[in-house]
Length: 181
Image 1: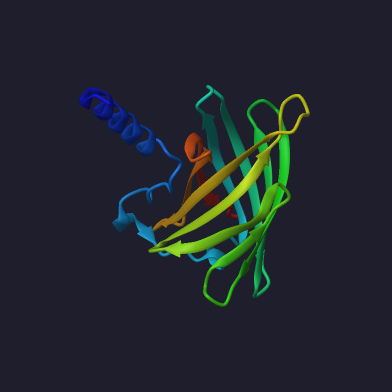
Image 2: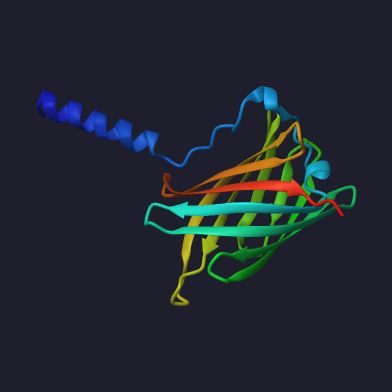
């Protein structure tokens, strides 16, 4: 194999590796965030404004109305989504705190169990989902890697990468604010 081909293969491998669906970096300036506490920061009523974008050109904005309750062991988080195209959806997370401080989570569309854990002041949640197909077929299995941080003003920033076979195929950006009644 020529030196050019070896160099080209190495360059391609580098590009492919940097495009992989690894964990997203913790967003924002570290001075602007406070430690994330699942049972505090996701409990109560909040509203999120967000968007989903994919490499195939799909872009969807949405509003998420969230209502979380903590029972001492498990956070139940009801998510009511309204998409800009009129679609509505409802999901219910159940995040149980484990003895080691991590969280085990379930949701209707999650394959197996989600894993939640602290990463410095940020909370990370990793899980696999089967996205429904538009024609009612099998759907596509993808992996979500969320990172949530709490800003000093109480606003939560949630950024997620969406991956398939180790490559990033989409992302979600969501800004969650407490509802004042």
